[in-house]
Amino acid sequence: MQEVTIRKSKRSKYLRLTVHPGGRVVLSGPLRASQRSIEKFLRLHAGWIEKNVKKLGKLKPVSEKSFTRTQYLKNKEAARKLVKERLAHFNKLYGYQYNRVSVTNPKTRWGSCSDKGNMSFSARIVLLPQELQDYIVVHELCHLKELNHSKEFWALVEKAIPNYKELRKKLRNNV
Image (cartoon, rainbow, N blue to C red):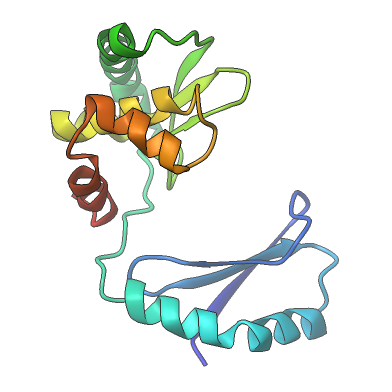
């Protein structure tokens, strides 16, 4: 059986498996989850784990390193300026309403969008080529209309970024 990192959290309500590029497997769950229930869950999902480790194990692991505090502070304003400019540019096409735009220092995400219209972007976006920056901005902008990854969502992304599939793959494979 594949080695599994177990993370328990106050915020978790259910057991959840994630396979990361490079084949690392993480099981997240609530603090109250017993060792027995975790083992049962892993046995039940052994086939899924094996299939996904085979698929994702070939990919280069995504750097989970966030900026150091100094790097983050140094790049935060440049990232905010870049994101706001690109949002204004692409929103001419979409015309969506959004609220707050923030720049943060997450370990694994490039961006996020809440159902209240607040968008957040990683300060590390400034390190990417412009085509990937644009993809991330458009991706989050489209979540204002579709808070999912449905066909409708991808059709919206494709309006501004016709080669989004190629760019998505580049981003996943750690540029």
